[in-house]
Image (cartoon, rainbow, N blue to C red; front, side, top):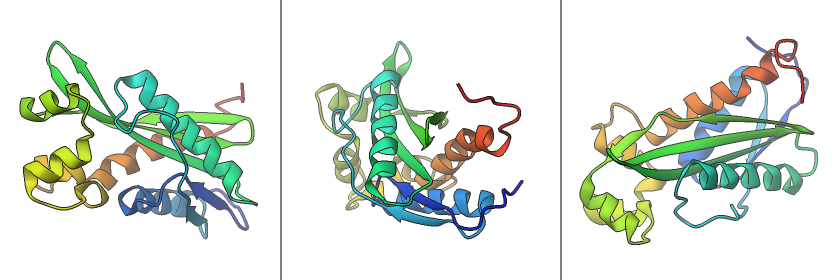
Length: 182
């Protein structure tokens, strides 16, 4: 479904190509001609967010700061990667926040269990990107296929999982009659 909008400016709270690409793709499909601008904004949370609550807060903070940071922006999008621990291991996931005026919508990626050697370093306070750079021998993996791309042998990339979560978060904007604003 495409919404008819003459000109939609979307401010994404990141300059990371692996996050900008899905924002451009999804908003371009929903709002043809959408202009996406990446802007570096703080998340207000740790470099490596732990748990759903902290990761969600980081995504919301990025979306709101992105919207406020680009004059004329109609939407602000924040994408925040996090990890959570439970009795079965350490799980990588992401949260997407999209804001438009007073409306805030959220989406989540699928989760991927991380290897225990990675989980140990995350428990010790390290950030996933540099840990994976060391493990893979690549440089700045988080701006490429990401941990997801490496661990799935390229079957999925970081952009793929962000695209799905972003698409899910836009459903209420695409069908406002079914999702009354709070």
